[in-house]
Length: 321
Image (cartoon, rainbow, N blue to C red; front, side, top):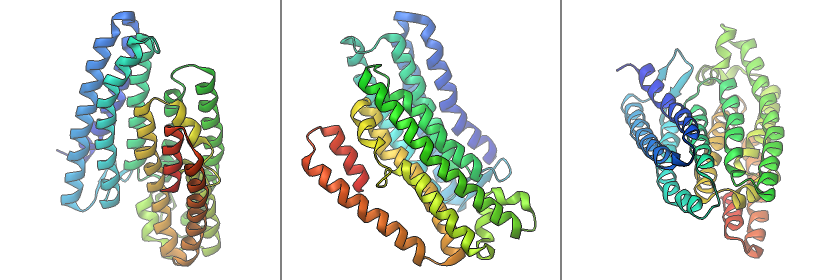
C-alpha cells in the first residue's frame, strides 16, 4: 500500500467519524447509543492506523506522502504514537463519563453528539499538526486545534465554561498570530536562498538549506515562533488560558489538552528549534528556552502549592512540565 493511501486513511478516519457523530443529532433522544458505537469504532480505528503508520515510519526511517506535504520521521512518529494511544484512552473514558453526564441531565443526547463530533475533529486537527511537512499547514492546524477544542471546553454551556472557552480562543489566537509572523519570516528567508523558492514552504527542505539562512532573520523568526507556539504549550506568561480551560472542560478533554495538545505545539517548536540550531548554533535558542522554562516552573510551582481545585492544579502541573 502506498504511503499516500496510508496517510489518507489516518487523516480521514477521525474527520469521517466527526461528521457521522454530528449527523446523529438528527436522531434526537435516541442518538446516545448510535453515537457511542460510532465513537468507539472511530477511536479504535485511529489507534490501529496511528500505530501502523508509526511502525512503517520506524522501518523506513522517514516517510513522505502527497509529494512533500505529509511527513513522518522518528520525532513525528513518537508524537503520533502518543496521540493515538492517549486519544484512544481518553475516548474510552469519555464513554462512561459522558453517559453519566447525560443520565444526570448535565448534557442532552444532542449535545453528546456535538461532544463526540468535536472530539474526533480535535483529533483530526492534531493529527494534521503531527503529519504536516508544510509550514503554513502546520500553523493552520495549530490554529484549528484551538477552534475545535474550544467547543469542548464550553460544552456545558454554563457562563463560566463559555467565558473560559472565549478566553482560550482569544489568548491562543493572538498568540498563534505571532507564530504566523515567524513562519512567514522563515519562509521568506529560505525562499531567498533556495534554488527553488516554492520548496521553502516544506520543513524538510528548509532544514537541508538551514546553514544558508540569514542569522538575524532566523533569530527574529524563532522569537516570534516561541511566543506564538509557546502560547499553546502553556509557557509563562502565555499560559493564562490553561487553568481555566482545564477546570471547565470535561475530564477526558482536560487529559487531551495536557497530554496531546501541548505536545503537538511542542513538536512544532522542536522542529523550528532544529532549524535555528543548524542556522546559528544552539546558544541563543537554548538560553531563550531556559529563561521561559525557568519562569514557567517558578510560577507554576507557586500556584500548585496554593491551588485547591484538582483540575487547575493539574493545569499548573502541565505548565511546569
